[in-house]
Length: 349
Image (cartoon, rainbow, N blue to C red; front, side, top):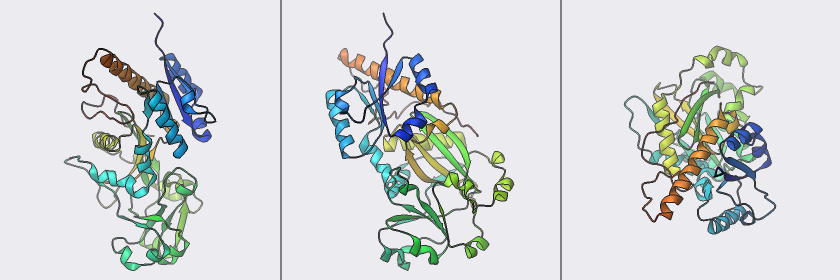
């Protein structure tokens, strides 16, 4: 009997497709019975396939309708991930609210989010009462986080003089010194991988008095900014920076995955320099640049195989007329909430 093969249709913007769909990934997936097939975005999704699974990072009302239509015609297909769940990450306030829903007990470490407020207009921006919970410096971020170039335009604001350079609606987030290191945690289903990157350098009282505003696009890319003194990073010794405890990070990742009902995301974590054991989650992104993650081809192929295997098992149980409530699901709108993670690791780079 011929080996059963599975097809995954991927619908990605050209830039994402170029970075993620590499020959190394296609070849490995194919060798394990998984064919990755490009979805033609100029044609209706329901007219294409058949697909066992849809992997996507496209937005908009039309695409959402196409997914719903495809699902109605293919009820056993898996959508990675649900558009409704993804949309929560398009707003920088609702994005981090999920962190407060997590119930994780750790005797040594604590976590949370920085203090932040949302500013919808210029009048509120200059209202001192609106700032009662914050103090300078703050990071100004666009409220909308939809992956566009505009949504990545951020600024480190040192004083009131720079406020007139900001354009609401924005989120103002307390800047916390964190040793110039950011931890990026990649989540692929049950797999959790943490890496460290250079970040915004700590801000001294002296720095506050000479700067008004520093613009940048991504925190982890700021090391290349012309205004950042490279001597800082040479003194920082990134390689010597201690990683967060693996089990602690995995617990947070698992909690976020269950709360958000998402399988493919990453979150950025900093260690509060004031308290060596307190961590702050500052950003969550859907379907990040996985190609930057060491060994991403194996991680993603394992994940695809898990999904398709579980899908096959589920269909088999349904065919027998048996209850399938105890089957572990990793479909778009469900997440495993029991059992130990088998593929957890923390990698330093």
